[in-house]
Length: 144
Image 1 (cartoon, rainbow, N blue to C red):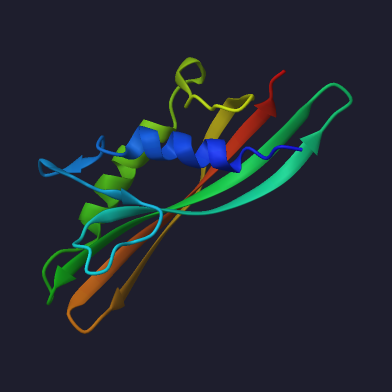
Image 2: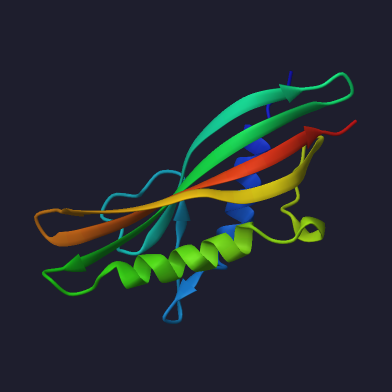
């Protein structure tokens, strides 16, 4: 059995890489955050996949987590930047059915919905870090 995870990861990266901007600057997208990466950035996170089987179809429900990470020195900045970037990410990923992300490897995407958006903040030695953890539900079908 082939799982759609790799195809979905590639589709998300291709859709987001270079297309999300904030104040005229591109917000980079990563699988793994480079050392000393400047803020803001987007991380393609974990995927949770379950198989949906009927007598006629093989399908999958995949929850894909993305993290929009912003950071500000001292007390400057706030959640607004994380919310604005998240809006752009969701608008790019969650489109109408005839414009869903294109998956390779014999899979078709037939539903995308925002499952949750949870904003957190923490303090490092140098920054206030705000992260919006967004979880997107993807309905995927194996196409023959």
